[in-house]
Length: 409
Image (cartoon, rainbow, N blue to C red; front, top):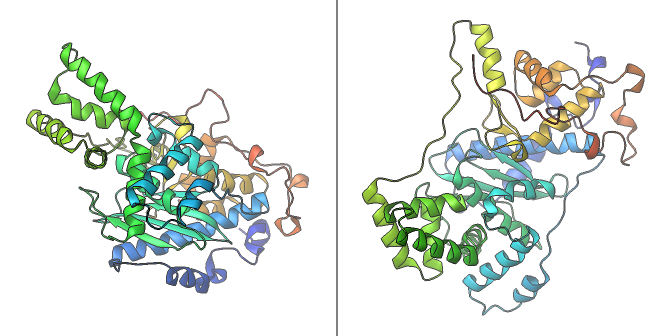
């Protein structure tokens, strides 16, 4: 494949090969608050995260002409920051209430947070599996990239919502200026390894946002009535409650303790443990078979997971640690559609083999524009054009297509 066929390689900021701005990545790495100092796996994950963010921002500039994001503003909270005597619990609760209003005050914010974060321009990267022995999150913001969050576990993991909500607090509260940071927790108890006030407030905010007080009281009352009426057993109430909110049981216990319901939470957990109730592990698709090339093709299709439904986005596993956000994939496919990049470079951006990339192209139904309609990115004027967000090639162009069949025949 000639360089002329891949117009995008001629861009001075093309993020691969010799033109990769290693000095910029190193500068970003040095900007992070690393208390306590992360171990080697976490440091490597952070480096991979920053390289991914650079590619993501590069595609946004090529397709959109600029980096688009919204800066959150909560006037009430900004006024409170001037009153240093406000306890952290009060700051976190009031900020969570203000943020919940922007989300539409849902009973179960964990179901909508991911979409809301991506809608305001946050580059949200989740790993294809738990990435380190600790639960890791990272907040990153630079003017040349916009906001980016690293969530160091699978998107379907209930802990992912907690990490996202915690990072959202840093985005809406800890600005002027923003501080890039790595956040880490015990993976079982969600105890933060950094006890600074900023981290404590972000944890309190995350719990308050994910488990709002009013719905919690209502669900507790409904559960009590169901138990009294014989509709359910007391030993299942704890599992039911954590499932209703879509959060880890340890987070639910901490939230109930925040609200003064610690004794009730302990009783419910004790009843649940006596019954052996607990969370279920996600089941990976079976891609076994007899034909190795066919197996790889099936595996590529199987990795186009859409377990959480079409509105939750599509996550593709790659050779790296992260799942591709559907928006990132759409940006890359837009470049392929416009003949700015060819299949080999598309595979490079997707972190896949060309065989796997071909499977993605077949499923996405993205074609190529006519040669005389192709666009040269060097001629961008920064204005919206036919490659704007509203017209990116979308996965599953059939409106009734929720994604590939996950059953391997």
